[in-house]
Length: 353
Ligand SMILES: [Mn+2]
Image 1 (spheres, rainbow, N blue to C red):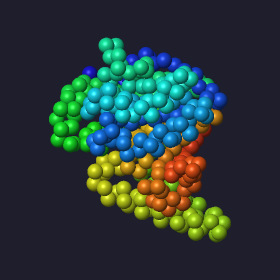
Image 2: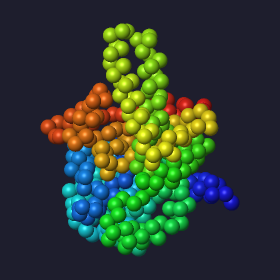
Image 3: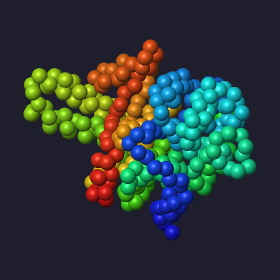
Image 4: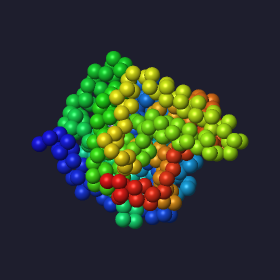
């Protein structure tokens, strides 16, 4: 059996066995993944955005009726034991508890916190799912971490865990994971893209730490925007030209920067280069980014990719001329990167596949 076929079979099984929840226009959902919470030491990747994350959970989501979906790799159990994580991040767990107390917490397993789903494991108080299907009208959103699209992770996860905990950790190797291997990242995204497109579902994953909206990476998005802005430049009112020109130059610079990074060269190939783009793949990104946090939001039948950041990256983001909104009196900012109605997305999935 081909590797590709085994993965299709695995994902079909994952899908079949997933609980299904209906999603209405009144429902609000936020999806975060890849927190990689550790023990608070210098080797803990979660530390960098921990305050920002807690602030956002409490002020943007908890008291506004959102269901919190944690889509895998919440605890970094391949490098740390569970008790010190729980001990160090009590404030964050108190927030998870508050969502759970209102029956608005869904915790999905990833490859770095996999042991928590085992029946013998009594460490975590939350139930864990392998995946969740959200049913919106007649359409389906398939929410899972993403490592299931790689035989490498489904077969060797325990071994990788051993390496990270007993070899990489003492040597001070940080964040050794799929997030830093562009070839694996690309393969996983490509497989989930192909699967979702074939099954006519929209998949919401994490795992690769790369935010994706409608199957578009940042590079694809920049190319699209440059095309669109350049096309509009000639026909728009002259008064808008200065602003459009500024954006064009900025996007061009960002693209040049991306292209200059040799590690990213593989990722420059689009996921859909063999045909028309199908907007069936979304990735929430991660909580441990050096440029802040990204997540996926679903409200009023629309899905959005949202970026939260603080003053450490503020100047860079605001220069882009995008409407980042300061959050209350906090040093934090919220920026909706992209937003589309689910109906529009599923119409395209239906007709383009
Ligand atoms: Mn992962």
